[in-house]
Image (cartoon, rainbow, N blue to C red; front, side, top):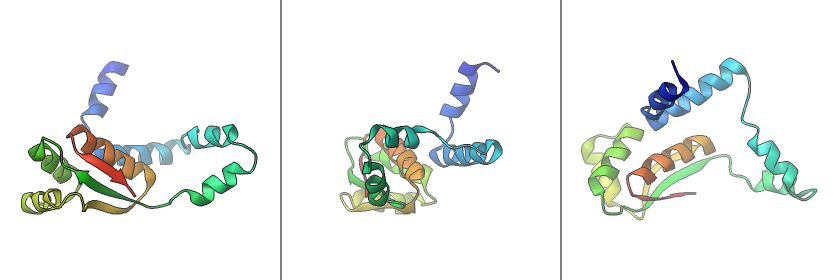
Length: 126
C-alpha cells in the first residue's frame, strides 16, 4: 500500500473512527503528539504553567450557525453522533444553541468541529 492510498483510506473514515484510530495508535506505540511540549517551550518562563491551568480538559461542541447547507449539516450531525434523522434535524434547527456533544476531549471536539466545518456550519468549542 502506498502512502497516497493510505491517506485516501484515512480520509474516508468518520470523525469518531479517526479518534478511535488515534487512540489505538497511541496505545499500540505508546506515544503522544509532541506539539503541546513544543508550544510550552516557546512560551515565556512560567507561562506554560498558567496555560496548563487555563486549558480545559472537557469541551462542548456547539453549532452557532447552520449556513447554506442545512441538509449537509444534518447528515454531518448524524455521522458524528448516534442521533436519528428527526433528532439531528431538531438539533440543527435549534442553532445557535445547538449542543452536539459535551464532555469531550480536545481531540474529539476538534475532530467533530472539523467534520461540521466541512458541511458549512459554524461551530464553536466551549
